Amino acid sequence: MTLSLQIFQFILSGLTAGSTYALIAIGFSLIHNATGIVNFAQGEFVMLGGMFMITFYTFLKFPMLLSFILTVFSVAAVGLLLERGPIRRARSKEILILVMITIGASIFIKGLSMILWGKNPMTLPSFSGEAPIVFLGAAVMPQSIWIFGITMGVVAALSYFFKGTMTGKAMRAVAASRRSARLTGIPVDRMILLSFTLSGALGAVAGIILTPITTTSYDVGVMLGLKGFSAAILGGYGSMPGAVIGGLLLGTLESLAAGLISSEYKDALAFLILLTALFFKPSGILGRGRLRQV
Amino acid sequence: MGNKNKIFLLIYALIIFTLPAILQNNYHLMVLNVAALNIMVVIGLNLLMGYAGQISLGHAAFFGLGAYLSAIFTATHGVPLWLAMPLAMAIAGIVAYLIAIPTLKLEGHYLVMATLGFNIIIYIVMIQFDAVTGGPSGFAGIPRMQIGGLIFASDRQIYYLFWAISIAVLFFSLNLIHSRVGRAMAALSHNEIAAGCAGVDTEGYKAKIFVISAVLASLAGSLYAHYITFISPGTFSFFYSIQVVTMVLVGGRGSLWGSVFGALLLTLLPEALHAVQEYSVLIYGLILMVVLVFFPRGLFPGIGGLFAKRRTVLPPDSRERPALEKRA
Image (tube, rainbow over all chains, first blue to last red; front, side, top):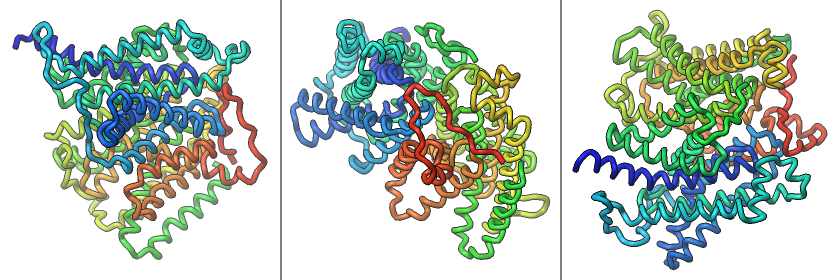
């Protein structure tokens, strides 16, 4: 295999992983825009997506589409409960405290999943067979196409939601200024609730489409969440196009580095990229330079 | 540091140093030795969280850096222990400074992310760089603690040494927060802009506090390595970072005595709940959530506050910080 073909192959697999990072990054952005907090439980939503799908599809033998929908609703419900429970009940609304609460929630969900689903890694069958498709000389798994397609579909649907619907516009208003949004009569609390629910749903989708390729276990959430977070920082925190670009870029860089340099340090590399981004352009690729230097 | 703190410190030291006379079980002593190390890490972290208003989710990495560097210097390269430990502390401090400089310039919680990323990088290096670190199976054969000709071999000897250092760290930190530097730090934690206007070098102080807390974690790590004589990456994973942050929050940010309480409680509690080890992750998450939701100032100050009049709930937009522990 020639080097250029190899690189092309790495880029394709990078885009697959990158798509899921993009979905996770969008989840981070949604909650950040509505509340200003970093939701550390985002990675656990992804893990739960895989776990619920396995439960519905493999254990309960529901049809795939029904399992998919049930999983999205279940994890969205977890997101809703997180907001309705600890986040809303918190006595202090200081950002730092709320962020730490999501870390607590993330550990709690992880611990509970370990008890419910055990410690062994589990997997899902691919959506449509395992036979690779040859594309411009590179082999592509059908699941990769599903991942890329579903991600793009979700992104398109979300951009329509934010630009074309009243609720979406209200959410953007809350992101711009919570106080002004409240003054214009937007139910801010409900928008915050919605942002958590949507993030849960996005995490679920990412978990479902990724599991057939990477397998899942109770402890994959932290790493996936951090990768998604790095993607969000890289693209420009809080921006949806930024999240998509950051996700795809991170996935590609990671895959290239793993293939060409060293696969052992693949995970470390993602965080090296995060640190580099923080050091040189903390507002991210699409950041509007709104970060204040203090 | 005020007479009240001096008296507390004296009583605390008296209790600590009479305890081994009652405790005959070596296992109990060992748990307390680990608690002494945790107290050092937690006090350092509390200086950062309570006074610089920043969180580090990478203290396990500094703890690990201290342990591994100390181990590599002494066991692999034959550097004497009295030199290896300060060397490890210096390296941890320099690394912390390099992380702090770019991230602390930014408003918001960028240090959380940077330290978190750093923790994971260090953890991966510990596992993958097995020619030097021993990889996943760990690093064995680390020389025991010794001062002069005296080798600290038994848990009892280590107890006196570790607790003496731990109390010294507490003494140093209590002094620090009641000094000029401490007052600047307190001003910084209340209102960064106002502190800056009053001439406090806010960025510099934040960086210095972060370096101090990293150095303390590194010291605890070195002591741990020379006590247990075997280290493996698992001890220094992200979960330990969460544990120490939980200890700070349970004890209350800004309260150093609270940190002693938090570290002791959360080190001894899992030992008491030995039967339910499977659930330890779950219980940690639950404690962290419950404490933060109901006692955002920490359990230690919170127990007192429970009997005081009901606190007013802050409006959602408020960024106000809870008042720090009243200084004597």
